Each structure stands twice: as C-alpha cells, then as structure tokens.
Length: 217
Image (cartoon, rainbow, N blue to C red; front, side, top):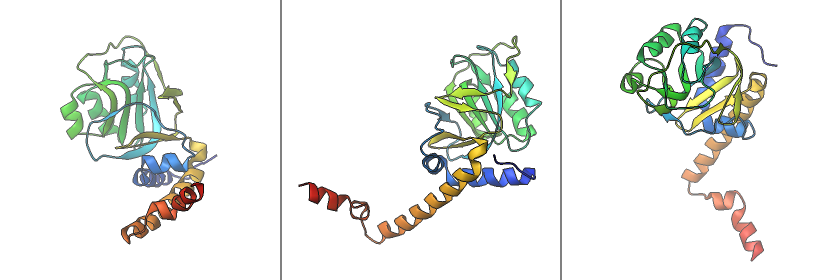
C-alpha cells in the first residue's frame, strides 16, 4: 500500500496525475477506475487531481457538504453524492467559496450545482452531473468520508481522483505507485509514436495491421 512521508509527496503525485491526464491514467490502470457518467466540466481547460474527501448526502439534501468543509485539507478533491443522482443543487457559490478557502483543488458532484457562472470563473474547478437551480434541504446529516460509488466505480476516502476534459478516473490509493509508473511509460511511448507520425509514418504500419490485413486476404 502506498504511504506518504509528507503532504508534499501526495501533492507531487497529484500534480503528476493531473498532467498525465484521465485517458493515460485510465489506460495505465488496465482500463479500470473510470467514472462512467456524463459530467459537465464547468470551466473549460481545467484539470486536477488529488485525494478524495467525500460527502455522502441524504437524498436531495446537502447538509453533509457543509459538514465535509470542516474536514477538507489542501489538495483534496471534494466528492459529493446522494443515493439517487438527481438535478438538485448540492453545491453553489457559497459552498464553493468555502472549498476554495480550505484548499480543495476540485469538486466532483454526482448531482446538481447552481451559480454555474460563478463556479466556472472562481474557486476550484467543478465537474457535475447536472446544472440546476433547484435547492437542496439541510435536514439530514448524511455521512463524511465513507466509500461511495459513482458511474460504477467505488471511491474511498484517500483514493486519488483525476479530472479533465475526458471525464474522471479514480486510482485506488494502494495502486498509486504502480499506476503512476505505468502511466509514465505510456506517456513516453506516445511521445515516441507522435514523433514518428509527424515524420510521416502510419499507425496502420507501425502496429502491423497492414501486414495482418494482407495476410488475411
């Protein structure tokens, strides 16, 4: 299992995951960990990664999000869920302001958000299932830092969440070193291939597909 001697170690790992990107990390992880949900990235061009801090809300209720703000640490990705995803706003500008002040690097919302113009311009970047003005209740406690499942992928407190224009992928904390190493190798291979493609070579030949197709005729 991966452990860290300091917060700076986790920060460096998160920065590298964000730079590598969702597609590369997903492939390097053996095509596992994808959050298979259509999400809206409110601020184009943003990307982030960090350990998950989770607010498991009661249905249509965001009281757990308020509670989770007290637990957020710098570098966290705040993950907000409820039992049945619905277009009810679990997050708005005021909660996002708190998340920014606490040092969250991104928010993943398996539900709705509102104040979307403000969220797109200020604070940590947001990935959300819905944008809707419908407000949430604040009556039920929910739970903070418990495992949740979004889009078929389990997210546990401390698992690394990577977010960019391709969506979201989750790296279990105990696989971090393995996946990082594989993702670096994949990046290096792709850079080499990109150079060959720019020189005029074709993937049809490099991957041996032309020879296979010819042999099959």
